Image (cartoon, rainbow, N blue to C red; front, top):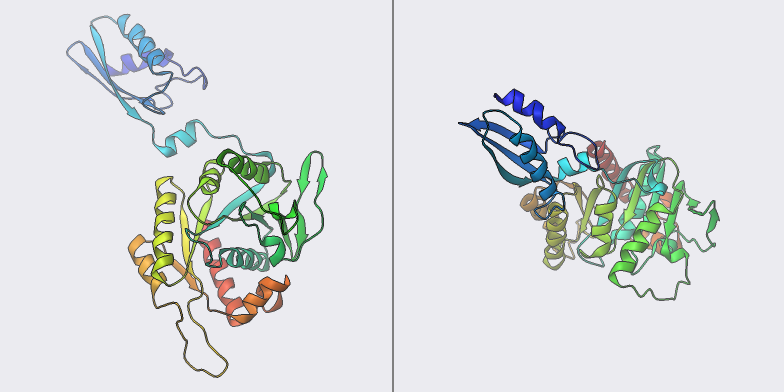
Length: 345
């Protein structure tokens, strides 16, 4: 018997769910013969796969029928993330099945202006001609309705929620479902369920981008997004001071660990230019975003100043990308959006 003949014989060992040969899908690999012993590696989804014993029995059964072969030695390995996604793709949630690209805006720390950046990056993508949705997934403190001055009740059609539309964006937030002064009280499983509902039960329609504003930290919402949208890109937000950088480092570590691509880093509140000054005043320190970029290899896409118009836009419901898109800060957002679209596409 030669390797080709043994490979052909093992074609009869099928995956019970995929109905395909383990040879063809690459779960049987590194096949060889030494004397009268067949050696091979069996790749499984995990070390505790419930199909492990079944596969061993089926392989041994085939090998027992082969002439001049006495036994089989099986070593084990696990499939990598890319192989699992290829072989066992997750069903796409109904609400997002027509969305091309996903961009989650994240930070390990609160108070860095993450939502402000998510809103204005989304609007900058609209200005570039893209169809864009904005999902406020900050289940603990949804503030997008305030920043966009949206108070109308939500509508439903065919058991799907219809997102609000404003400034060319399709918008959805849990903040639209309760009063602004009501608190959200969540426990872990409910957070994951709420995120999946915002993705799957909202009729987002055809979009080029769905921008997702994540809550701060590295908890359930971030992990749920990663599990629900395998190809979601991450935009990390920081401020220059070390206390923010430390938390953002941990968040970058989380997304690297779960295999989510980080498209870039934005440093917010980088400097302030007063009306009577000619030099930038670095209130929160200098060069934090550059150092973090160098440490992690995540490209720094832009630095955003402390801008009174930016703050006022978040308070009065007219973001700076609507009121002053061609201002210095508005042009920075446009540059960041262009960098993001170049890298994602």
